[in-house]
Amino acid sequence: MVIVGISSFAYNSSRKSKSWIRLALLVTVVHLVLLVFIAQTSSNKTLLVLGNYYEWFNIGDNSSQSFGSFGTENMQTPSRTSYNSSTRSVSSRTECYNRVLYNSSEMVCTLRTAALKILDRQTSPFNKLGLSRYLPNGSAFLEMKTYKWCAVIGSSYFLLGSKLGKEIDSHDAVLRFNDALVTGFERDVGSKTTIRLINSQMLVKKKKNASLLKALNVNSTLFVWKAGGRDENLMKWYTVSKDMFNNYIKWCIHRPEQCPYVINPSVLWKCWDIIQRYTKERMKNIVPTTGFTGIHLMHHICESIDVYGYVTPTNTNCHYYDVHKCPRLAWHPVEAEKNFLKTLHVGNENDLSVKGKLSLYGFHHDCVTC
Image (cartoon, rainbow, N blue to C red; front, side):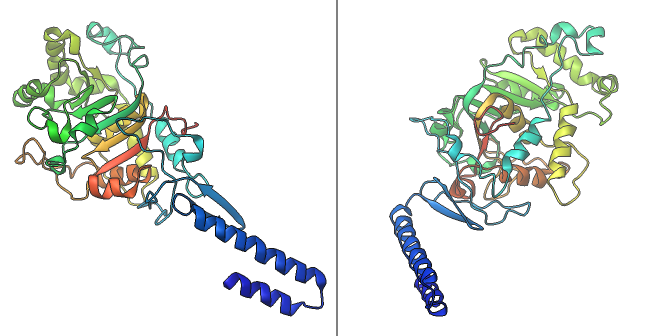
């Protein structure tokens, strides 16, 4: 009705001009046809009006979402085709980020500049300290298998009772953290473990070391991290990390098939700098959490990543496998790193707000074109 009224106004204002009459009629007909087309396709299309241009994005039913920070409130964006255990098709480029509305891919490309590095046999000063024989070849990480569909499993108490185990195990690769148990919790968190990322305390402290051995899957690959200084002085880092390296050597001697990859601490500060770049408030000058580090690791070897038990509808630091284990995370920039990753969420809003499932594009995804 509004369109017809506008057309009538144009007609009455210039009825002496035949050209204006024809123009008004043409506008009316075109808009009526467009409205019919919208009505017929509204079940699976969203129309975004940008100035004088119409852009169509195939987003599926009820999959519109709003980003929660960085000036992108209530913006709708197309989501990728959902993966499931029976169909794992990769998204087409038409289902990638809406780069017109918000260039999330630019954030992913920025994060990619913080390339994950590991200590290897050529890394100085370790190549001169008798440690090189315990470290992998320089190309070992770069030659790791890449996966199409990965899961990162946080340790949040929120996962208890979630019944997500089957969904989690349907992924091609699964990363878990520290001493997170799966035995007895398979219904909620699955049983598959491809990679396990641990912090240095898991090697240093006997109690934590024992709990790690209890949780460890013999077929999984281990990574370990420990924070260092911003100056990237690895000799200084080694000097203050001797306890970790002494226990690292013992571990590798007794379990050579699971000698962990040691993450170069410089990447942690590069990630911090990137998160701060997209955060309005000043962050605490402490490296990101084990959770963020693990997600960043999987960005390097996965096309798509589903993260469970990291960004959850209810906030809790307690673990699903030990309700009395509620570590303090106050010294990490937890909220900033979670907001950063929520901005990159490409799944639907219901997954995030109800299931606590965060979906991300990895660096190998077709939609990441940097």
